[in-house]
Length: 249
Picture (cartoon, rainbow, N blue to C red):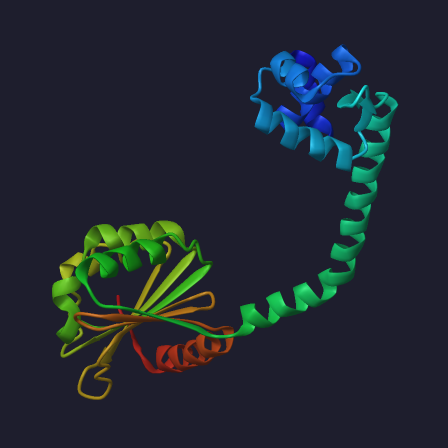
Protein backbone atom coordinates (compact mmCIF):
# COMPACT_ATOMS: atom_id res chain seq x y z
CA UNK A 1 0.00 0.00 0.00
CA UNK A 2 1.67 3.15 -1.20
CA UNK A 3 -0.61 5.39 0.88
CA UNK A 4 0.09 3.36 4.02
CA UNK A 5 3.82 3.65 3.45
CA UNK A 6 3.52 7.42 3.17
CA UNK A 7 1.87 7.48 6.59
CA UNK A 8 5.07 6.10 8.11
CA UNK A 9 6.47 9.62 7.78
CA UNK A 10 4.11 10.98 10.42
CA UNK A 11 4.90 8.38 13.03
CA UNK A 12 2.63 5.41 12.33
CA UNK A 13 4.12 1.94 12.12
CA UNK A 14 3.61 0.12 8.83
CA UNK A 15 0.93 -2.18 10.27
CA UNK A 16 -0.84 0.69 12.01
CA UNK A 17 -0.91 2.57 8.71
CA UNK A 18 -2.29 -0.44 6.84
CA UNK A 19 -5.02 -0.94 9.43
CA UNK A 20 -5.92 2.78 9.36
CA UNK A 21 -6.17 2.87 5.55
CA UNK A 22 -8.25 -0.33 5.55
CA UNK A 23 -10.60 1.17 8.13
CA UNK A 24 -10.91 4.36 6.07
CA UNK A 25 -11.95 2.31 3.06
CA UNK A 26 -14.44 0.13 4.94
CA UNK A 27 -16.28 2.66 7.10
CA UNK A 28 -17.96 0.85 10.01
CA UNK A 29 -16.28 -2.55 10.17
CA UNK A 30 -15.58 -5.44 12.50
CA UNK A 31 -12.12 -6.46 13.55
CA UNK A 32 -12.31 -9.41 11.16
CA UNK A 33 -13.27 -7.17 8.23
CA UNK A 34 -10.34 -4.84 8.95
CA UNK A 35 -7.97 -7.79 9.37
CA UNK A 36 -9.06 -9.26 6.02
CA UNK A 37 -8.80 -5.91 4.23
CA UNK A 38 -5.34 -5.11 5.60
CA UNK A 39 -3.97 -8.65 5.25
CA UNK A 40 -3.16 -8.91 8.95
CA UNK A 41 -4.29 -11.66 11.29
CA UNK A 42 -7.23 -10.85 13.55
CA UNK A 43 -5.32 -10.78 16.86
CA UNK A 44 -2.66 -8.42 15.52
CA UNK A 45 -5.26 -6.23 13.82
CA UNK A 46 -7.06 -5.81 17.15
CA UNK A 47 -3.80 -4.71 18.81
CA UNK A 48 -3.15 -2.10 16.10
CA UNK A 49 -6.76 -0.89 16.31
CA UNK A 50 -6.33 -0.30 20.06
CA UNK A 51 -3.11 1.63 19.35
CA UNK A 52 -4.91 3.80 16.80
CA UNK A 53 -7.81 4.41 19.19
CA UNK A 54 -5.37 5.56 21.88
CA UNK A 55 -3.87 8.00 19.39
CA UNK A 56 -7.29 9.38 18.42
CA UNK A 57 -7.24 7.98 14.87
CA UNK A 58 -9.97 5.35 15.28
CA UNK A 59 -13.10 4.93 17.32
CA UNK A 60 -15.30 2.07 18.48
CA UNK A 61 -19.09 1.96 18.52
CA UNK A 62 -21.72 -0.67 19.26
CA UNK A 63 -24.38 -1.43 16.64
CA UNK A 64 -26.94 -4.19 16.83
CA UNK A 65 -25.13 -5.78 19.75
CA UNK A 66 -21.78 -5.91 17.99
CA UNK A 67 -18.70 -3.69 18.27
CA UNK A 68 -17.63 -1.92 15.09
CA UNK A 69 -14.63 0.25 14.42
CA UNK A 70 -14.32 3.30 12.23
CA UNK A 71 -11.41 5.49 11.22
CA UNK A 72 -11.51 9.10 12.34
CA UNK A 73 -11.37 11.83 9.70
CA UNK A 74 -7.93 12.25 8.08
CA UNK A 75 -7.95 15.71 9.63
CA UNK A 76 -6.92 13.94 12.85
CA UNK A 77 -3.59 13.08 11.22
CA UNK A 78 -2.76 16.79 11.28
CA UNK A 79 -3.32 16.78 15.00
CA UNK A 80 -1.01 13.77 15.34
CA UNK A 81 1.66 15.64 13.39
CA UNK A 82 1.18 18.72 15.59
CA UNK A 83 1.68 16.55 18.66
CA UNK A 84 4.91 15.27 17.20
CA UNK A 85 6.07 18.82 16.49
CA UNK A 86 5.30 19.80 20.07
CA UNK A 87 7.13 16.75 21.37
CA UNK A 88 10.18 17.55 19.24
CA UNK A 89 10.10 21.18 20.42
CA UNK A 90 9.85 20.04 24.06
CA UNK A 91 12.77 17.64 23.65
CA UNK A 92 14.82 20.39 21.98
CA UNK A 93 14.12 22.73 24.88
CA UNK A 94 15.18 20.04 27.35
CA UNK A 95 18.35 19.39 25.34
CA UNK A 96 19.16 23.11 25.17
CA UNK A 97 18.71 23.30 28.94
CA UNK A 98 21.00 20.31 29.52
CA UNK A 99 23.72 21.21 27.00
CA UNK A 100 25.81 23.49 29.28
CA UNK A 101 26.00 20.79 31.95
CA UNK A 102 26.70 18.05 29.38
CA UNK A 103 29.44 20.18 27.81
CA UNK A 104 30.94 20.78 31.23
CA UNK A 105 31.04 17.04 31.96
CA UNK A 106 32.56 16.36 28.53
CA UNK A 107 35.26 18.99 28.97
CA UNK A 108 36.15 17.69 32.42
CA UNK A 109 36.42 14.16 31.04
CA UNK A 110 38.70 15.38 28.23
CA UNK A 111 41.00 16.96 30.78
CA UNK A 112 41.32 13.81 32.87
CA UNK A 113 44.40 11.71 32.15
CA UNK A 114 43.83 8.37 30.47
CA UNK A 115 46.27 5.49 30.70
CA UNK A 116 46.47 2.43 28.45
CA UNK A 117 48.82 -0.51 28.85
CA UNK A 118 49.80 -2.92 26.07
CA UNK A 119 51.87 -6.06 26.23
CA UNK A 120 51.69 -8.44 23.25
CA UNK A 121 53.42 -8.04 19.88
CA UNK A 122 50.22 -7.35 17.92
CA UNK A 123 49.29 -4.52 20.26
CA UNK A 124 52.77 -2.99 20.05
CA UNK A 125 52.53 -3.05 16.26
CA UNK A 126 49.13 -1.34 16.47
CA UNK A 127 50.64 1.36 18.71
CA UNK A 128 53.27 2.17 16.10
CA UNK A 129 50.48 2.53 13.56
CA UNK A 130 48.56 4.78 15.97
CA UNK A 131 51.58 7.06 16.42
CA UNK A 132 52.19 7.35 12.69
CA UNK A 133 48.49 8.21 12.17
CA UNK A 134 48.49 11.09 14.68
CA UNK A 135 49.47 13.81 12.19
CA UNK A 136 51.03 15.89 14.97
CA UNK A 137 52.81 19.15 14.14
CA UNK A 138 55.79 17.99 16.18
CA UNK A 139 56.96 14.65 17.58
CA UNK A 140 59.70 14.30 20.19
CA UNK A 141 61.58 11.05 20.75
CA UNK A 142 64.16 9.87 23.28
CA UNK A 143 65.82 6.70 22.01
CA UNK A 144 68.38 4.55 23.84
CA UNK A 145 70.20 2.85 20.98
CA UNK A 146 71.97 0.38 23.25
CA UNK A 147 68.65 -1.01 24.53
CA UNK A 148 66.37 -0.68 21.52
CA UNK A 149 68.54 -1.00 18.41
CA UNK A 150 66.86 -4.30 17.50
CA UNK A 151 63.54 -2.48 17.14
CA UNK A 152 64.67 0.05 14.52
CA UNK A 153 62.40 -0.11 11.46
CA UNK A 154 63.13 2.14 8.48
CA UNK A 155 59.54 1.91 7.22
CA UNK A 156 58.25 3.05 10.61
CA UNK A 157 60.64 6.01 10.70
CA UNK A 158 59.58 6.98 7.19
CA UNK A 159 55.90 6.87 8.21
CA UNK A 160 56.62 9.15 11.19
CA UNK A 161 58.41 11.69 9.03
CA UNK A 162 55.47 11.66 6.63
CA UNK A 163 52.97 12.33 9.44
CA UNK A 164 54.62 15.27 11.20
CA UNK A 165 56.08 18.65 10.28
CA UNK A 166 59.02 18.19 12.66
CA UNK A 167 60.48 15.05 14.20
CA UNK A 168 63.13 15.62 16.88
CA UNK A 169 65.03 12.64 18.26
CA UNK A 170 67.65 12.40 21.00
CA UNK A 171 69.90 9.46 20.17
CA UNK A 172 71.50 7.92 23.26
CA UNK A 173 74.45 5.61 22.61
CA UNK A 174 78.00 4.72 23.66
CA UNK A 175 79.46 6.57 20.71
CA UNK A 176 78.39 9.37 18.46
CA UNK A 177 78.11 7.00 15.52
CA UNK A 178 74.61 6.88 14.12
CA UNK A 179 73.15 3.60 12.96
CA UNK A 180 72.87 3.57 9.13
CA UNK A 181 69.15 2.76 9.38
CA UNK A 182 68.71 6.12 11.11
CA UNK A 183 71.41 8.20 9.43
CA UNK A 184 69.70 7.47 6.11
CA UNK A 185 67.04 10.01 7.13
CA UNK A 186 69.34 12.81 8.25
CA UNK A 187 68.89 14.69 4.97
CA UNK A 188 65.12 14.73 5.45
CA UNK A 189 63.83 18.25 6.13
CA UNK A 190 61.55 17.05 8.96
CA UNK A 191 64.23 15.04 10.76
CA UNK A 192 66.37 16.59 13.53
CA UNK A 193 68.79 14.46 15.53
CA UNK A 194 71.05 15.07 18.52
CA UNK A 195 73.29 12.80 20.59
CA UNK A 196 73.74 12.09 24.30
CA UNK A 197 76.16 9.56 25.86
CA UNK A 198 74.55 6.50 27.40
CA UNK A 199 76.86 6.63 30.44
CA UNK A 200 75.16 9.78 31.66
CA UNK A 201 71.71 9.46 30.12
CA UNK A 202 70.88 5.76 30.19
CA UNK A 203 67.11 6.00 29.68
CA UNK A 204 65.56 2.59 30.25
CA UNK A 205 62.53 3.32 28.06
CA UNK A 206 61.91 4.85 24.68
CA UNK A 207 59.73 7.93 25.00
CA UNK A 208 57.69 9.52 22.23
CA UNK A 209 55.71 12.72 22.79
CA UNK A 210 53.07 13.85 20.30
CA UNK A 211 50.35 16.40 21.05
CA UNK A 212 48.78 15.35 24.38
CA UNK A 213 50.06 11.77 24.09
CA UNK A 214 53.11 10.21 25.71
CA UNK A 215 54.23 6.73 24.62
CA UNK A 216 56.63 4.98 27.00
CA UNK A 217 57.94 1.77 25.46
CA UNK A 218 60.11 -1.07 26.74
CA UNK A 219 61.19 -4.30 25.03
CA UNK A 220 57.88 -6.10 25.53
CA UNK A 221 55.28 -3.58 26.64
CA UNK A 222 54.11 -0.01 26.27
CA UNK A 223 52.30 2.57 28.37
CA UNK A 224 50.27 5.32 26.70
CA UNK A 225 49.34 8.36 28.76
CA UNK A 226 47.02 10.98 27.31
CA UNK A 227 47.22 14.11 29.42
CA UNK A 228 48.11 17.67 28.32
CA UNK A 229 49.91 18.46 31.60
CA UNK A 230 52.02 15.28 31.58
CA UNK A 231 52.82 15.69 27.90
CA UNK A 232 53.85 19.31 28.45
CA UNK A 233 56.04 18.35 31.44
CA UNK A 234 57.90 15.65 29.52
CA UNK A 235 58.14 18.03 26.58
CA UNK A 236 59.99 20.49 28.83
CA UNK A 237 62.31 17.68 29.95
CA UNK A 238 62.98 16.81 26.31
CA UNK A 239 63.78 20.42 25.41
CA UNK A 240 66.18 20.69 28.35
CA UNK A 241 68.01 17.57 27.17
CA UNK A 242 67.91 18.84 23.59
CA UNK A 243 69.79 21.98 24.57
CA UNK A 244 72.68 20.03 26.13
CA UNK A 245 72.71 17.28 23.48
CA UNK A 246 75.36 17.36 20.76
CA UNK A 247 74.38 18.13 17.20
CA UNK A 248 74.83 15.32 14.72
CA UNK A 249 76.26 16.30 11.34
